[in-house]
Structures are given as structure tokens and as C-alpha cells.
Amino acid sequence: MGAPVTRTNVWSELRVTSAPQLSVSISPNLTALAVIADALAGRRRGLPELWRRAVQARVSPLGREAVLPLAAPGYSVVPDSVAPITPMDDMSVSAQVSALSDIPPESLIKDLEQAFGDGELPTHWRAAAERPGRWLRGYATALNDVWHTTEPLWQRARPLLDREIERVGIASVRGGPELLLGSLNDRIRYGERGLLIADIEASTYELGNRRIILVPMLAGRDAVIVSLDHPDAVWIAYPVPGAESLWRRPVAPDVDALSALVGPVRAELLCQLDQPMTMSMLSSNVKIAPSGITYHCDRLHAARLISRERRGREVWIARTDRAEELLSLFRR
Image 1 (cartoon, rainbow, N blue to C red):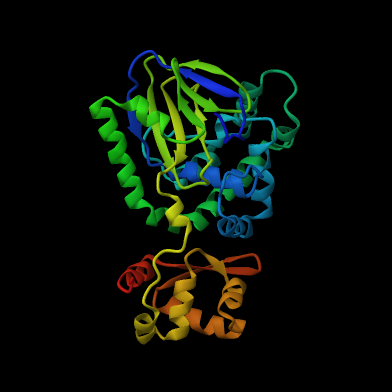
Image 2: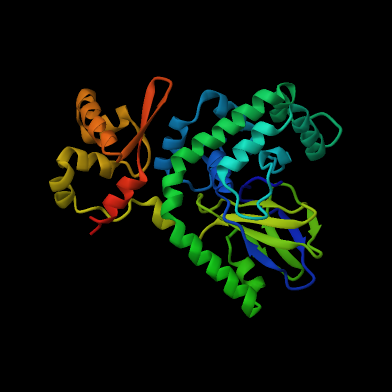
């Protein structure tokens, strides 16, 4: 399985001899993986700094340690255990996390041997090979933590994802898959012999009779994740068109009208929670003492407009679906 790659003159080639069959998988676990590589593992791909900081604050030390090998300089290959369930169909993050918890430690060792051969493992994967159970737990924790941060954004992206499903369907029906594949991302080109994908390590594969599964992601503009060697299908994860509009703050609610309903302080708190925040982050943003924030959050929690989750010494606050529905009524 290939990881996101840097800008390079090296290309992996997927040779295509006939019009490829395309399908779409709505699998947010690839979004979580791209965000992990960008925000935590050091392979920056255009994720906005605001979201990078939010992810970094959310993930536990064990998770941060586990994800470091995913974006080691000079390597694009990672073991199949990173995505234990191939996105043949729509696949949730919770299903991936559950699958990770079911992987025996010895299976990770086999995956590493398959990815890197029988010789000595690359330095960045040796700690995982020495304590595979710890690595699997840490990576599952990181995947889950990152998803809790990015899930509200994913929910707002549904119209973009629906539009992309329609775009792929039209290209398939009208016989233009080559043009579509060449327009997915600047790191992907459609050449004379097939698909070229910017990579760190050059490789060549034959598509044969396999289909191509497209997996739109919410990720930095340069994030691309591919798997070219699966026996049943090739899959390509890429930023969904229009994703940059979601990184900006959405259209603001009419705060005056919302204030009349829930009060000015609570209206401001709800508007601040475009992404999950700690109590201290909220206190700093709205310039209210922590004791005052606690009081108002208690009231919002009682109204089921926010959720609270304690992680170590910090309490993380997020808007609920009920709050999102309320705010949608006050959008200008």
C-alpha cells in the first residue's frame, strides 16, 4: 500500500490497455490516514494549520509515537495492516479501528516482511516489529482520535462527496474515464500507456482486468494515497474537489438571532466550535474565565447542544448533531 508522497520527478506507472471500470468508495478512514500523515507524521500535504494544531492536541502520546513510521523520508511503502480492510465498498473508521484490534501481532510482522522483503527492516519500522501489539494499539488510538476531530468536517462534506459520486458516474457512462483520472490531482497524470502517479519509489503495475476504486478524501490539496498491487482492484484516494471551501469557516449564523434564543455567551461558544476544542482553548477564544466557560458549557450540555469528553487533564467540547441542526436555522 502506498503512502502519500512528496513532490518528485519519480512516477509509479499503472499500465492500462482498455477503458478501466471505475467505482467510488466513501471510506473516511483514508481521510483520517491522510490527516495523520500530514499533521502527525511530518509529511505535509496542505492541511491548514488550524486543523493541524487541533489534531496534534487531540492525539495521545502512544498514538503520536505509532504514526511516525507512516511518513518516513524516502519511503512510500507501508504494511497492509495500516488499512486492514480494503475500501472495496464504503468503509467506516470504526470498522477499521475494530479490524486493527483484531489483528494478531504476528500478522503485522508478516505484513512488514511482505512490504520490505526478508532483509533487515527499515529503521523506522523496527520499533513496531519489536512490539507489534503496542504499535497496533497506538495506531488504532491515533486513527480514532483523529476521526473524532475531523468527523464534523466530514459531515459537512456530504454534498461534495455526492457531487463527486455523480461526476464519476457520468464519466463512466459517457466513456471518459481517462479524462476523469487525469483530473483527480496534480500528482496524477494519464499518459500514453496509462496512469502515472508521483511517488518516491518508482514501480510499474498492470491494471489487467481489475477495476479502479476512487476514494475521495478531505485532506490537504497534495494528499494522494494509492494501492496498486491488490489482486482484485486498484484504489486511489485523492482530495475531493471543492474541499478547500470546507477548510474555511462556514457561513456564520446570525448571532443576534441565536443570542435571543440561547443567550449571547452560549451563542458565541456554539459558533466557536467549528471543530472540537478543549475548555482552555474555548476560554482563550472567547476571553471568558474558565469558571464561566464551565457554567455555560454545563447549560449547553444539559440542552444536548454539546458533548464533552475527558482526555487526561483536558475536557474536549464538540457540537452535537442537535446543535448543527439549530445553527443551520440561523445561517445567513
